[in-house]
Each structure stands twice: as C-alpha cells, then as structure tokens.
Length: 196
Image 1 (cartoon, rainbow, N blue to C red):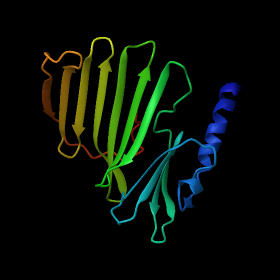
Image 2: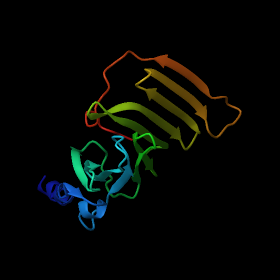
Image 3: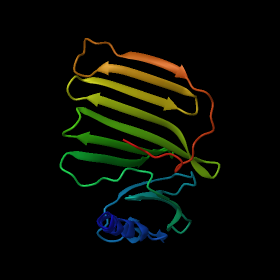
C-alpha cells in the first residue's frame, strides 16, 4: 500500500499546484505537467474561458474583464487516469463549441484482452450558475467482427437513439431505434464519473 501511495503522490501534488488564476495556461499549470486544455466562451459573456485537465484534476477558469483567468471550480477524479502501459491507452479530448457547450471525448484502445474499442462523449452547458449534462453518446465497436453500437441521449428533449451496424459490411443496413426517457433533473458536472 505504501508503494501505491508513493506512486500516486507526485501526480496529486502536481495537480494540486494548479494556480487559482493566470493570464494563460502556462501561468496556471506547473512547468513539466502534462495537461489537456480547451478555450472558448462558456458563460456567454464574450470572453474566452479556459478548461484544464491535469490528471486527476479538472479545473474551469472564467476570464475576467482584464483578461485574467480565475478558477471557478475544481473537480477531482471525475475523468479516467491514463496510466502508462503497453496494451491500453486512454484518449481524452476537451473542446468548447461555438455555442459554449463543453465537450469531453473519452476513448480507449486495448491491444490485448478484448477486441472492443469504446468511446464516450459528454456534453455540458453552463446555465443557472452551474454546468449541466445536456447530452452524451456511447460508442463501442469490435475490431474482429465490425459490429458497432452507438447510443445517443439528449437530456433536453428526453430522447434516446440506438444505432446498431456493421462497419465492415455495407450490405448490412443499420438498425435505428428511438425511445423517450422519463424526465429527470439535469445532472451537474462532477456528479457523474466520465468513463470510456
């Protein structure tokens, strides 16, 4: 247990050192720390905001009138940690759309143990003072058979779409089904773990 703790402490220490404010990501993230970042207007005030993931911490920064990014909130361990290995990788991309939607793409690839690749996309929008999940998409595909399934959920319209297809065989027509979901309150960012 001590060995495991010693392996995790440097990662936690580097993530905890994210500055509370800065003029750019270089002033916020400690030198030498790997991170994923995205810029765009999240709160629709006309200024570009900043999102930084320095595993295992995700931090959101809103830009003030002077152009300085100020940390709005920090989330711990809501995204998968990419541990170095020879047979499994995690692909994480964070983007902010022109409409201010915060998009997380979390994918995985295993060279052994399974023939399936999977990825999930999570969409959040800033409204009523917080970020709420407005949609998600789950995709899985077999590298052996080409069988694939995509599940798309819109939490604003309460619709769920499932598409099953075979990406190796164009003669197999995709099968699409729609269902209506029961209305539920939107989930806030940080209430759900974003898996691949």
